[in-house]
Image (cartoon, rainbow, N blue to C red; front, side):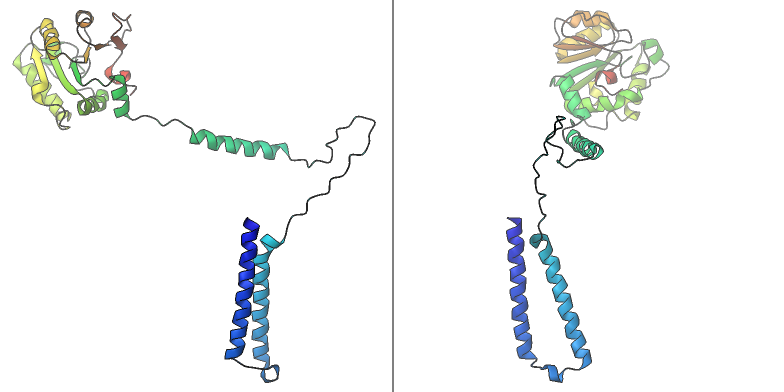
Length: 272
């Protein structure tokens, strides 16, 4: 099909050249007797240019590779292979070509790395409401006594936390010893930019004076997920909450089939 198209193109060019020559002769009637040396040279140059242009267009379609004649295998008593006349292809060329082709295939079918938003949705099993304690999960501090001095948001958890607020209805909660501790926690969250995404507001940061009070918050909110560091609360809520994440540096046996373990919140989502 390709050769036929090229032949048709060459014939079209020939016809156009003949037509153009006829028109030029009609417009400029000249004879060889009236041509000077400069005119003859110009016409000769034009003829040579047209000839090589025609050969260039004709050569891909006009020339064909000659197939080597197959020779009958010479009889041999030594049992040599009958394919001795087959062309020999260097093994390096074949192997390198196959390797490049395989690399292209591997790159094409390489799985696309999921985004953090996709990971969060997958890990949370499309859960829409999440409750989470602050100490040891969101904050560097691990006890209410430390909150009386300072409150520091863990930088490594910030990206995951903000992604959860975009997808889920998130409530943060913690036991504190005084009002000053509450103010320190809210200020630390605000300076970290937790409230700027629009998914989390200060009214969804809850404080209580006992561990039992935090457990009561969770049961009243009825979340799809609860995240905590206290194994006792995890155990108490296992019957009431669909899923729970126990954040602890020490991996413990799962208290129930709906309880997961991770050293940190960000590690649970594969961010470390």
